[in-house]
Length: 209
Image (cartoon, rainbow, N blue to C red; front, side, top):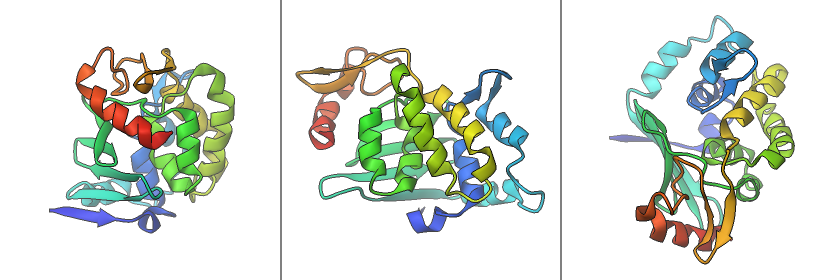
C-alpha cells in the first residue's frame, strides 16, 4: 500500500533531503568519494538527528509524491526500498537504483519546471542532463535552492559541486523530427540506443516545449 506525501511534508525536512540526495549520481572529484560519503564528510546532520531510524521508517513503506506542474503536465516520484522511479504525465523518464537511467531533462526544461516551485527543481535534478557549457549557471541555481533546506546552508556550495559533477553528461541534446533527444548512455531520451522509448519521448517533447 502506498503512502502519499506532499511538497509541504518535505519542504523543511532535512532528513528527507539528506537521504534523497544520497541517491544522486554525484561525487566529489577531488577526494574521489561518492555523494553519500560527501554528505557525511560535510557534517550536515547533528548527532541528535537519527538518520537511520528515519530512513527505515520512510522506506519501509512504498511512498509517492506527485502533483501538477502546470495545466498540461504532472509529475510522480515513487520511493521504493531499492530504487526511486520518476514519471512525467505518467510516462517513465528514469530511475535511481541498481539499474539506473537518468539525464532526461535539459537544463532549460528543469529551470521552467523549477520556476513553479524550488522543491521541484531539486526533486528533478537527478533526471537532468547538464551539458558542460551549462555547469556554472546550473551550479548557482543548485546552491540557491539548497540554501532553503535547513542544515544545508553552509555546505550548499560543496554539495552543489558534487551534484553537478554527477549530472554533467558527455553526450549532447539535439533537436530532431521527434523533438529533443540525446545520445547519452542510460538515458530514456536516447531513442537511437533505446528505440522502445521513442513514442513516449515524442509525447513528452510535445508537453515540454
